[in-house]
Amino acid sequence: MTDETRNPPVRDLTPEDVARGLAEDRMILVDVREPNEIEVERYPSAVVVPLSTFDPAEIPDPQGRQVVFACRSGRRSVTASQAAQAAGLPYDAHLAGGILAWKAAGLPTES
Image (cartoon, rainbow, N blue to C red; front, side):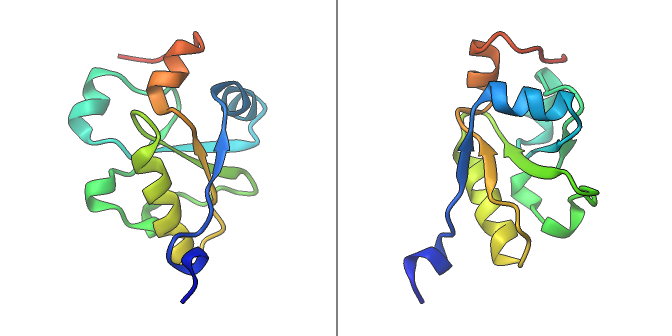
């Protein structure tokens, strides 16, 4: 087994790339943070699939849109992307820097 099979590559997307993709309906954002984190602050319009109980089958059909994973800082989103790829799904992108980078870029959150 190669390293790439064990740890498939995950593409970093900037908050601006993701915000544009969401605005243009080209992306679906999957937030893998836990419910207690999401209660405090969430990405607008994100689908929630917590990493602690992560099942790639719970990700809604993206209907042609690119699936992008997100979390707090960008670590769990990489793990989720790799798990989805291991399950045979072509979901290889995440929001680099997570919600911290999202807010630093001045993008909106909901509370």
